[in-house]
Image 1: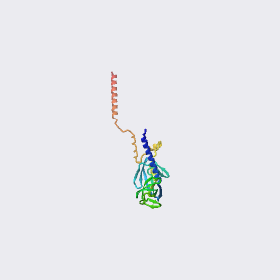
Image 2: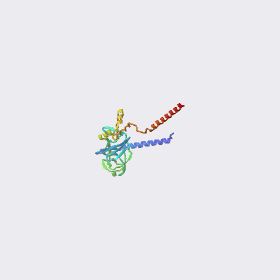
Image 3: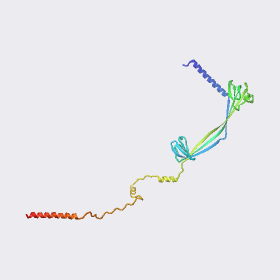
Image 4: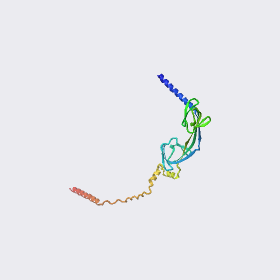
Length: 276
């Protein structure tokens, strides 16, 4: 449970916060602020860079510029677009050999900002030329810093901080002037495909290989046609008309003589048997 003392403390803190907020809002309401902005003459700077795509892989693009330097863009966003022949191409549509031209138009717009703050009150305390405490129309006191160029009006007459006295009803107007440059950039990227080279195209056509189905006619032509630098086949050696002599007739004569000897011995043996 929350104790009664803690609840009272919480209520006091909340009440103080509401009171402080109300005082701040009232003080802000007592000070009137007016801001005027005047634009100057804009200045433009146009920068054109050209390069050729030499490598593309995923979101990485390597480009060689006109100055000869090679630049690596490792993470080109998916939203990046290149205008080629009226078409919007992403990084995945780039090809090696494409020419990329990037045009950057930088516009610098100078601005003069004038802020006018006006407050009316009664001088409670003054510390010239640094600050002054005024009693506002709501009866609350508020301290203000006195910036350079602050103009005070007392009874319709202009005066400065050193002439202020407690009890004077014054109207203070502080005018501050600042200048700033607003820089905007407009980037457009265009590209073009590599130029058509008929010599290169002819070279590609000549060196290309087209598979061919081999038929019986082409196979026979391939078998018959011999390379031009191959030696011609020599004529075959003609077969001999008769066998060469490899021996003499002496063995045949010896064999006939042996047969006659056997025949003679046979006749002699038969004659002997018949004479008995």
